[in-house]
Length: 227
Picture: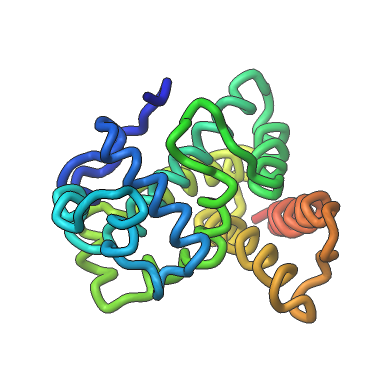
């Protein structure tokens, strides 16, 4: 069992998989298979075979694979906010907090043994590759009304608060922060698959380059508008 759990929106699931052994196996297998196969080729049947269970058992936790993807992405944003809180709680100034936040966003994601049933490195690759599929849908408005994007919004609000503290006159904190989070994802995807669309190198120091790029975008934007 994990040492920590996140309280996620109950509309994301029929039964929270964090709290049962089977549920944790479902999450672990879904991360592995979506990372390996891609979301389009992933099915509950394949996952049930992976965990030596039945499709019916999976449907007791999630009504469909889109809700499962929403759950995984929501868990990821909660985990990221948890890590940001961990590394910024002792920092005094919003400038220091924002720099630390950008460092965490840009850093290579590795397995976190506080949550043994999830491979965060694989989950990060899923978010990079599949995030757009969670909200570029016909049902985005109804999903939003149910609060299914709460994890992303919560993180944006936290980071946006630091932006406003640094420059209260800056008029676009929400736009800047949501752009920051999506840019971090897009640039990593481009570096891996479409290198002509980015200046990040295809070598391990891409994470340092991404951090510097994000800092440049964010702090120049905040500083350039004073009224």
